[in-house]
Image 1 (cartoon, one colour):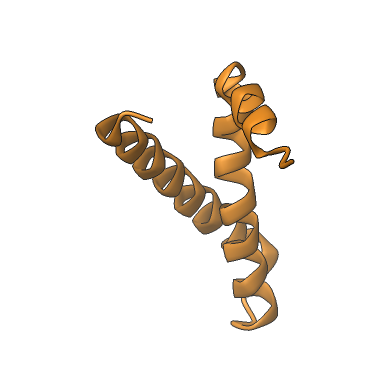
Image 2: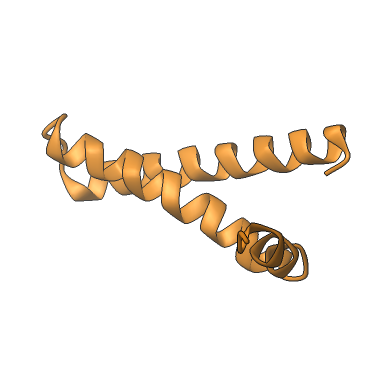
Length: 69
């Protein structure tokens, strides 16, 4: 009795939310790691994190479309 099918259909009906989460989570983690581990300033890490998140989200969307999911 998993909630995964329910949450999967919930995200499928809200593609904008899915895209924002797919950009925000990896981009935020990447920017946070640059600040904490790399010692960069927040102002220089956030734009790189946003770009990383956008690339990650677009690549994920393309792969999902190519695989038909």
